[in-house]
Length: 73
Image (cartoon, rainbow, N blue to C red; front, side):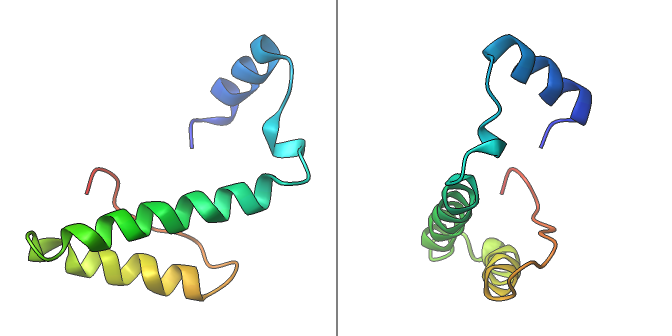
C-alpha cells in the first residue's frame, strides 16, 4: 500500500477512510483471493509465475501471515 502520509492525504480529500468500514477485512481478503486466482490462471502459459503463485497461495492459507508478494507479476 502507499506510504502512510499518502493514504492520510487521500482520506482527507475523500472524506472517509474505507479501512474503518466493518466489511473492509472481507473486501481485502476477497481482493487478495482474486489477485491470486488471476495469477494462477496465467501459470499455464507463463510457468515462471509458479513460484509467486505458490507463495501467494501459502500466504492465503496462513491467516495473518505477512504477504510478501512480488508486484507486477
